[in-house]
Length: 275
Image (cartoon, rainbow, N blue to C red; front, side):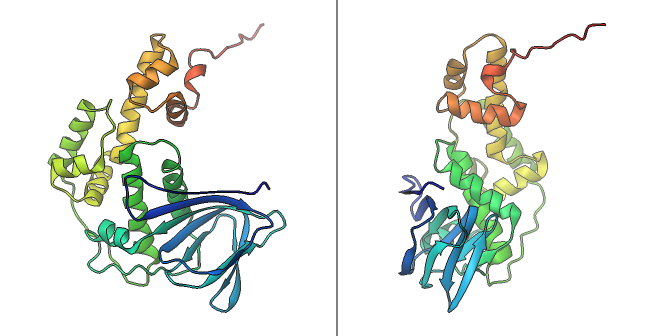
């Protein structure tokens, strides 16, 4: 396994730092973070000296280290470990979760979390913050992931709010996305439009349409791109006209919806069986 590491912040969202890394021979010395550290083990296994015990976090599991908890990090498998980490400042957590929980304590039950659905959310969010992605996707995934993390794995006992469908608000969001599908719409725009909190509008919109607002926007862009491709427009131009960042951004989202890449559209060869 090749060793590498990349550490970066988000220019839009204060209070978050991200790490993508692969280590085989490297080991972290004993240290702590001021932030809440949440990560996913994508390959191999990571070892921790944590609270007086040696702990192994295997592939497919989530690692959670609370602020100021002293620990190490080292390979616990022959091939090393590949992983992605988030470091969340307390101010970001409280700002993001204040509409959902009356009292946000930043501590999470860990250091190992077995939650495949949350693992996939963490991976999707991390990737969205590494490559160029729509702002609505980044913000929606962050809101949803943190809500699920604290709802299911914090030391506090949280109960989700039970709310009916806000049909007028959801219709306003849907109509706004239809009218602005070429743009990079933000979650704050939709919140201002409906007067709903960011997470509430995500939740009620999905209840009614079975898609989050960012999934709905991506689907609108991708469907329009397909119409253009069907007319013979080049993928690079279709990507630009539909508000994707570049052709590779269209490529990723198009394949998720249609199962083929834009360049393969209309090029499938069918062999007629001879009798």
